Image (cartoon, rainbow, N blue to C red; front, side):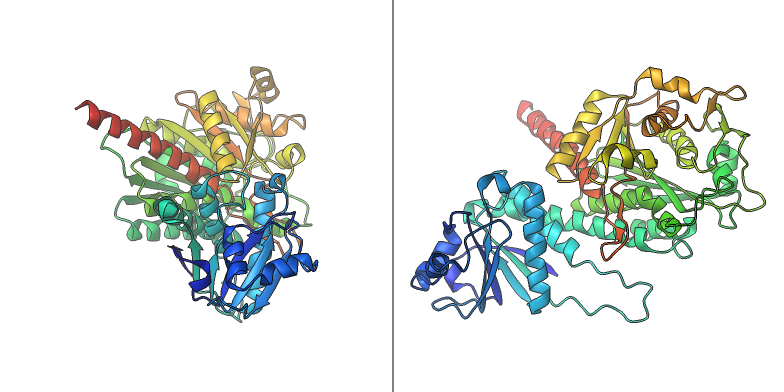
Length: 508
């Protein structure tokens, strides 16, 4: 599917379908008004006769509208001005893509005049359109004998004024890169545990390294991790025949020696719970327990494609948690890479056990910031449902940057406290720290555990347990969150770099 920004008069554009809009009170926006004028009031007549009123999400597909070149006109209602929030805009795009799929249309022009979103921001509205249209045409067929029919829609054009074109083209390039990253994250999440193993994740990272010159990849196996003292990470994979992997991707887009921003992903490619075995119902969804890792891979792809002027390191702690004869038992004590000892009271609280060693490893880079991403706690779903990523941090500015990035990218997070009082729940009589802190504040105590390994740098933890995949029904599958939030966070940092460079150039 090709995306393109175009200019021109609506009535002269040759396309299979042009999408134009009206407001809740039947007022036609400029592109729709131009179609109306060229067709001698055809659209006004439809509004007057009550065929369409402009309610949010309303649609009318028109064939052979007189006086215009497009074969079809899709007239859509944007509702009232307070009905243009991201949720409404997302539903609008979903409705349009459903119509495009059903009609088998191969080319479409969106002429929404920058009015579909509540924010007056052509860059944002254009980028979201690109990301969401891409997402709606994603199809999983990797493990099906009958492959999905090829997507019929080949060309998506977005009509902008000449003065908005440059901004729109930047939005389009960023949107395509982020959409590709989301696709990668979804594909990895959706693959079953017998295909997507720690070794497979490592191979996907290596393939990404071959695709982009600025990206170098190194893989640490069980022996190398043992030498580094990563006994906590290794304890998780001990019950599995699959070897564990630490995957390190270094993107060098910034100045040499510039401190990198590190992303650390939880890559439990399947989570049975280990000896603390999970109940069987819905356990198949534990193939999604590597969605944090998938979002790191997807974000690294987006960053490399956008060629951001930053140094970014992606670290994935990959293991399979199985109840084999070598498996770690409740009550076992391990020494982490940091030297701290952990009493593993529950082998199903394994995400923090792989992450803590990866976070210690991240310290070797003398990082500017570290963000870890993990499907960490069911408690996060109880706290925030399926709409927001939990954000916990030892640095208010970093938490704020992620919160703002999530808002802008329509991939939202919400902060939870990381107070010292919660730390006491992790006290152990037999080790420095226990790996669980009981039922109360489960998301917070998990982050408290990780905070013991991140004292040397600015760190934030994203708990994506509620947002990384959809359960049950036709929507079941990985979402690719939080690739948009992370990409936006890094885009914001890149913008700061560019502003500083511009400022220094003027000083010289």
